[in-house]
Length: 158
Image (cartoon, rainbow, N blue to C red):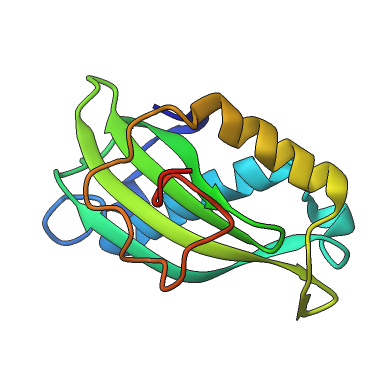
């Protein structure tokens, strides 16, 4: 199912004119979930010039409404990776376990503004997280984010 790395309640300022969480907040939630994963593998503000991930592409599917003060949490998976890229998949749930949205993201490792291989300890951290979920079934509808397969990928039977 993935790592639970983000949890929060919907504040009033996140609502749109319909009383639902506005659409750009879904991207914020998934961005914060990605940041939590990146921190787990060694990215933080102190070393962002030396090691960071930039998102290249995102697809978000809105499946149900989020209302004010609803308790939310995400489950984050690494679906594929290579030395420079990460294919991430986030699921957003309500406190009742209902799936509210999904986010699929392709990110690249950047050092001083250039795409470069991630440091070996980061690659090892990514590999460890991936290995823990590699036997999970691939979520339905995955793949629209990636144009080319990555070296290690649940997409192509690896």
